[in-house]
Length: 221
Image (cartoon, rainbow, N blue to C red; front, side):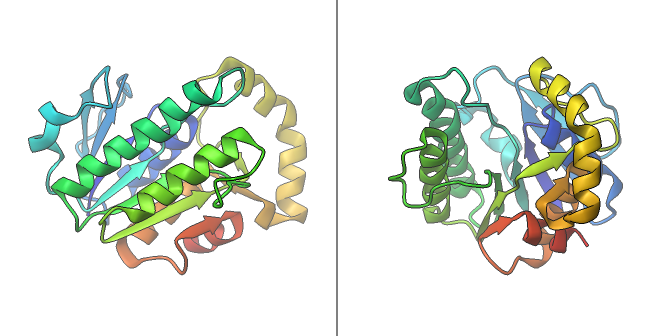
């Protein structure tokens, strides 16, 4: 399987990249992002591009992939709805439309979030925009598309957020998260499980197009 990976330098993307490089089912990974991963591996190829909304010049390089794992995202904290929508909806759907036109046989997997509002009419801004993004992606003519909706994600194997405040928060909450994982395992997933579940969904499918933490963990197993 050949995989396109957007957002490989973020916390989730780092975990997904690790699992792709370890998994024998994945033949090659093309990381597309605004910055390089800093990793070197025979399977890994990279394209660094400042404007990910315009992929016209890269179309020849993006053909022939079996799956796209879209892990690129931004926190809504401090952003207006327009600014958040530009990154979350406009960029994601633009990439999706480009890839669907190049390879409609591709499986597209999008990292959304628990609490996403599929009705697009809720009060919570980020949930409403995420819902609009999911619905737009599901309308594209991919072979399959899956919306991953994790809640708490525990970083594993050195994966870390690019946002300093998040790194501090994860460090402070680690003891609590560890205990919660023991007593309520389906309330938490990990960066490792996210990667394994994406690979499984791309290769063998998933039972539903919207997957919460429980379903993600089940696929990872």
